[in-house]
Length: 89
Image (tube, rainbow, N blue to C red):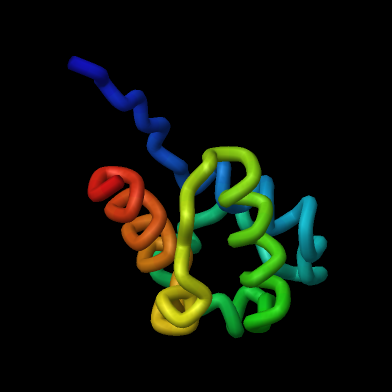
């Protein structure tokens, strides 16, 4: 019997990767309560999100379909997608 260890990706992990991949908009505080703030309001477009998804896939070994990312408009929605994908793997 093999067990799979999953690591939950947290908001802190996601904001770190956003900063590393795409920088941080002036006047935007990613350390605040941004879980339900749309990425566009945070200054991140779809290209920035694809960069972050690539980093998540490399760091965590998770496969995330690009088309699913389009529907994740907030950090909370993206984290749910990532962490549900891990649970299903």
